[in-house]
Every structure is written in structure tokens, then in C-alpha cells.
Length: 227
Image (cartoon, rainbow, N blue to C red):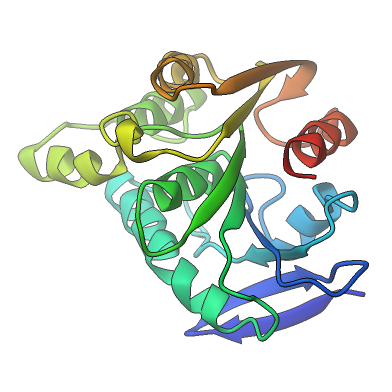
């Protein structure tokens, strides 16, 4: 059974647990593929995790996105996480698990650096870790043709720098990375794993940045981490 709901303007898809529980997993989708709550729920259903799996929507742009727009949507998604949880009648207030891919991974990581949402465990797949990495990857992929690091751009980047806030991440962290991950994302991912005590890095052969290959392997790794 798939449930759809809206809280404070944020749509989200919910997969209910097999047994009654107040446990919740928040799962944010990518800006590429899968790029909606429904498709993320189909790609990473996490059936082996007996919890409410909640897939909030990111405000997905319909055109190539500049760095400032990316920063704004990530900040908004992080700010909306408490409202999504508050709209769940079965959440019992205990710490939640946070999961995400790419931009959704960025949201999950930043959520874990804050105190507004209590976080039990973290699992991110090919995550964005800094806005600088997002810009570099966008330039490499041709999604951006030019970017200038103005004072305003640098100011927008600072709150999105997970490495700068890594000491605030106290929950166990799993980072799943594909063989074909964006080269621009790799250094910050490696630095994050090194900065968070006990963090685990799992490399998956043939996995692209977008979750379109080896998704069963990704689902299995994340399920093991959370179950």
C-alpha cells in the first residue's frame, strides 16, 4: 500500500510498515533519476526495514539549475523535514533514519547536522557533500556552462558544506558510492567518511551516479544498515 500526503506544502509518499511501529525513515530522492517521491519509493522501497518509509518531494526545477537555486531548494527541504514528521500520526517522537541520493543525500546529511530532527542512522547514496562539488560536477556534465564564485555564492555555499559541520554528525553513517560516480563528488565524499568516526563506505561496481543500475544492490546495502 502506498500513501500520499502533504504537509506545509510538501508532498510525500509513504510506505507503511509490516507491523505497528512508530519508527520512521525519511528518504529523499535525486534531482535526476529517480526524481520523484513515487519513483524513489519504487527504486529504494526498503521492504526489509520495518518502519514507515517516508519519501518527501524536493522542489525539482524544470530547467538547468544555477548554484543559488540548488542551495535554496536544499535548505528548504532541510527546513521542512520537521513539518513532514509532525504530519505523521504514527511517529512516536523517537530518532529517525535519514536516507537520500545525490541532492537528497545532501539533504539527509544536513538534516543530521541539525537538532530539529533526531537522527538514529544515516545512509546516503552518491551524495552531494558541498556546493562546490555540485558546481564542479555540473560544469563537468554540461549542466552549467559557467560559474563565478562571487561573495554571495560563497555565502550560499557555506551552510551547505557538510564537511564543515561534520563534527555535528553523531549518528552512524553509511555512504554507498557507485563505480561511475561523478569524479567531482569523490574527494568530498572521501573526506566525509574520514571525518565521521566509524563511517562506512561501500563501493558498488557498475553503479551510475543516477540510481538506474544495480538498484537492488543499493537497496540491499541500505536495508542492512537500517534494519
